[in-house]
Image (cartoon, rainbow, N blue to C red; front, side):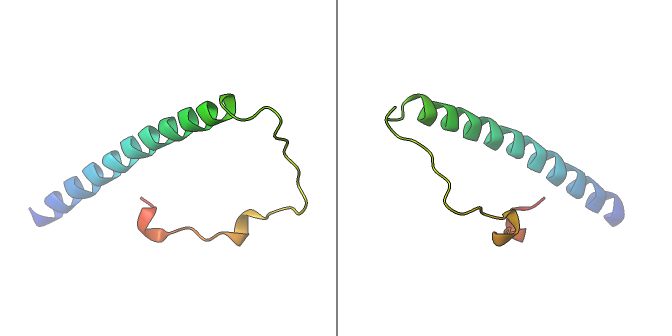
Length: 64
């Protein structure tokens, strides 16, 4: 019975994580677009040094 309970807990946790990730991504996409549309049109993007993705560590507490 404990094994069944653990499996349900894990399943529900993963479902909850997936739902939250989708909601968070939707909010971030909306916010990014809103900020882009409301930016000062005189601002320009310039890249002086490439940034590598592996320079940033992920927080394991936020991973599902």
